[in-house]
Image 1 (cartoon, rainbow, N blue to C red):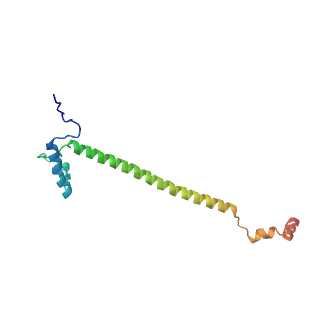
Image 2 (cartoon, rainbow, N blue to C red):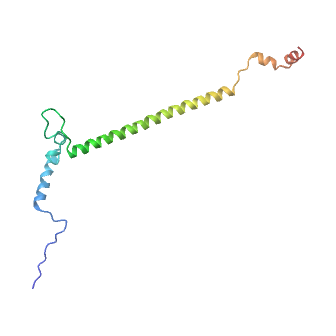
Image 3 (cartoon, rainbow, N blue to C red):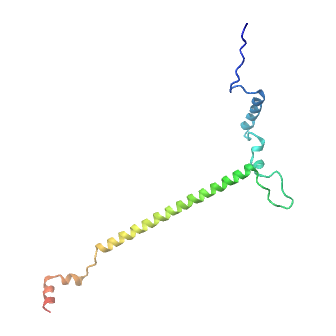
Length: 132
């Protein structure tokens, strides 16, 4: 009795129908279109229906997900911009403080000496002042 080998049902075997659908998408991507017709922003962002009285329509699952993601992006951008502004302000303040310290040190090191002070320290002038 001869054994008949059955083909394996591994992951590599796919139905013909799926392969045909995948092949159809290749031309859309090659032309520059989205893979599916409903992946464009117009179909993704605009609602399917509207209220007659003008009320906004509720967001669909993907729209809500994108909206919340954009809110999260905005929050992180604002947070990082605040950190950058604080860092810039602190560097400016530190530079100003260093300048003030340098000015204080420089003003304390050098004292102005006038002609009158020089005359007091001369030996003849010192004796005359002491006698008087």
